[in-house]
Amino acid sequence: MPATERRSTRFRRLLQSPELEFLLEAHNGISARIAEEAGFKGLWAGGLCLSAQYGVRDSNEASWTQVLEMLEFMADATTLPILLDGDTGYGNFNNVRRLVRKLEERGVAAVCIEDKLYPKTNSFIGGERQQLAEIDEFCSRIRAGKDAQRDDDFCLITRIEAFIAGWGLGEALRRAEAYHAAGSDGILIHSALASPREVLAFKREWGERSPVLIVPTKYYSTPTDVFREAGFAIAIWANQLLRAAIPAMQQCAATLAREQTLVAVEDRIAPVAEIFRLQGASELEAAEERYLPRRDRDDRVIVLAASRGSALGELTADRPKTMVEVRGQPLLAHIASAWNAAGLKHLTVVRGYLPAAVDLPGLRYADNADYADTGELWSLACGLAAPGQTSGDLYVCYGDVIFRRHLIDLLSEPADDFTIVVDADWRESVNRGRAADYVRCSEGHSRQAYYREIWLERCDAGLPEAECHGEWMGFLRVRAAAVPRLRALVTTLTAAPAGRRAALSEMLTALVAAGEKIRVIYTTGHWLDVDSVADVLNAGRFA
Image (cartoon, rainbow, N blue to C red; front, side, top):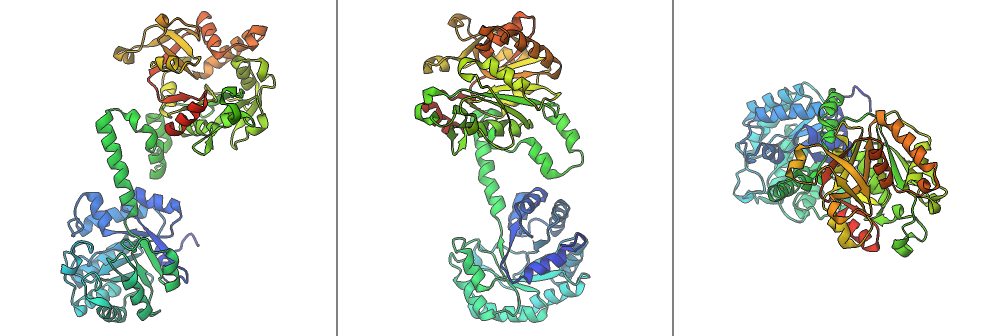
């Protein structure tokens, strides 16, 4: 397709294509861009959805100038040709010719007008009570629109409402013949039946005299091949994007009203960065700097995934725990997706047990060949020594946890050299009877803790319950300036045999003993440590 080809020319090609083509409804700039990214070749700017996004009825309550304004945003947001659902043309022949000129000025490729009276009512609301326009009067709108166009490829489609109004096939054909003779570029034949019987009967009688478009909203269960075999030119998915958005918004609103916390929805909605991307604004990078947690683009994540996970039994007979499937994907894929969604792309996975089984694309790998005789700290040393070093911050996490993306945001925000996330709901680990990295902090979790800086004092699986303030979840962030100090400590600790077998919790305690301040961010839940078969099942529900 030539870069300079007009949208009207592209729409005319769709209209005259020997194949069945498709238009998707869009009602604003962002929905238009989403439709284009999905691969559609053209858009339907439907009256129902355009009016609905303004919160008014599909009865010409939104003025034609308001529709034009939205169309301009849509045309700016996408390169696709747009067919406007122009209702009745917003009046008589004079309104139609003015409308056509204004559409051409805004780069809109085509308009569809329907043979009803102004103001119109949506076809699915009491259709048989609605009045049709006189044929001669409607033909005057067609002729005026065609005479007004300056672009030879601009198309005027006429929508026949005879079936909607209960007038039958004969009247539909009579009107189609008159509209075709008046200059219509194509016929949109409309029906409110759950079966395509009416539109198929029309197409059989009409033949190939001009292209025929359909809107299968009511007869949605009809196989698309039926439309292909009948020879229709274009099928319009006329309201599905808006209808898909409504239940999602209703569910989100109800959840926020009920839960009174953003945590309940954050992982089910698009990140702010996705809105920036769809907007295509030139100030995107500056906006990300203003609104998203500051991250150097060279930030790196080390995922410790060397263990087998023998407690999972047969599930890890031929793969390590990190590759056990949760909802059809390896646990590691969920972990990588969460980091990627937070903007961190440089992930190094430290493998051990059956390393060849850990082979997801897009990740870097380091191997701990002595995984059976070493601990987490030695795996971290392997990760730190692996190629692909970066100059940014360092993040560390375990390879057997599933978690909400917002935990990464919590970890990223403080400016301190060392930051960890601690689950204040630590008694859940005790109830499950599993080992955990318990922590003692400068103070426990409370409402006041949100206003204060909390610091780690000790991290130890054997911490007495009376001293425990929470469970370290395995998430650590080290600012770039502090990474050399971490490396030096890891080197010192692993030089001793006991250090090779040490857990990361011992490293945290050693950092505190060395005078480092480790910032603690409290959370409550929103993660799951996969240690047992029951955890795998729970992870499926969690994901």
